[in-house]
Image 1 (cartoon, chains in turn brown, red):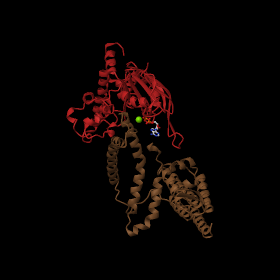
Image 2: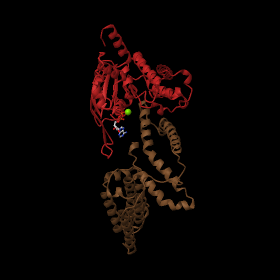
Image 3: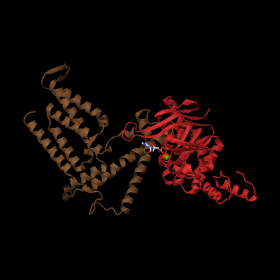
Image 4: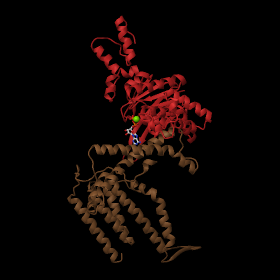
Length: 268
Length: 287
Ligand SMILES: Nc1ncnc2c1ncn2[C@@H]1O[C@H](COP(=O)(O)OP(=O)(O)O)[C@@H](O)[C@H]1O
Ligand SMILES: [Mg+2]
């Protein structure tokens, strides 16, 4: 149950994509998202989908693992589809009853929206599946570094994010353990009315919070006793380094985005 | 009929994902009513996974778990009821305390059993008595008592359900020697008073040597030994090869034999060794 949460989960591997610098992957993802919002037609969507499939194939991540990540968002996707289906008018009218009607344009927009959301999510999942959370925050920190000039606490944000990411699996494991311990005493988390079920969560939430605070306290002490005092003058043990393949990939993705824009400009 | 029996029990975590790991493989075991069984094994050998099958918290990937001859996973109702019959005390159980008071926390199990108020009160007091939680602590918050006391309260919370089978997963981990000794004594007392079946998981040889009548040794998800403590501890080399130790006393006895002081091989507690040495002095030799 809880363990099925895939957010921010890393799938170890050694593919070309796994080996890319996190900054490269972040930039490519941003470029990909931009392209996704520029795309307007079957042709451009088709090219993007092909690109996504190619990247997934190269990463050797099982497509089923990526699709599983879509499950929690199924409701939103279906809702978007239905909304667009009935709301957008244009082209030939296919069916109509009462105040509702479905047009060809509606179908097309609904289809595009669904694909846009699914491709957006799958693309970002590909990033988190092939990059360790630590590498990701390191990359993000470096990319956002210029913001320090205008006093944005970039390092602190990055540190908070890596701590949060680091503790998600720990907290999930802990929640699982406490759930089991309470079940062993006959706690029932599955049946009953909504209010009863909310109340039944107390035996899980109280110990979880207590231990999260205890952990936070211990971590703060551990960090302080190792002389942590913010980002000032801090050096890295593992320096990120861009290789030739990284520059080539970024260049290729920019060419790709330009290509899409040009295609759209020419009415494709 | 054995009270607990497993048939070809296999458990695989995260089956079908890149993190798939086989934690138990083909475990066949029978535990009789009233037995005191010790489970030992290196960290990660599958002990905790095994005991969580015995009260239906984990579903077998393959195989069956029978209690009194009935498959505990055959119906949802049975799986819920089994929790009250097979009490499982988790490792570091003090992290599950959640109520405002010690008394309320111990009564959580009995309340889930939908017992009468009077019956619940009786059980809470009895359980607290077994593990040595004084009534003066009843109205305190579980967060403000000492670590050792928390552990006792948590164990009492399971004993209060009066389970036929009591399973304790490393109940002495992280306690001082005195606390260990006293909790182990509490468990023995509980068994003597109720005749319950006890399964004690530990990686401390000393603990387990002292009170178990039967030892089951896990290694890499398999059962590698299942015998009396005497037989198990006599195979010191084999135990060492799977990362376990023999009790210090057994070690001393072996060294003594190497020095041609012939104490019998079956010594694994201090009192046994003392008796053996004393009887050597008198000229006899017995176990
Ligand atoms: N929730 C879990 N998910 C995945 N693997 C697990 C989980 N719990 C335990 N394991 C794995 O199963 C094996 C047995 O673990 P466990 O039963 O906890 O052993 P023990 O209690 O003997 O230390 C270990 O290899 C462990 O990594
Ligand atoms: Mg364990």
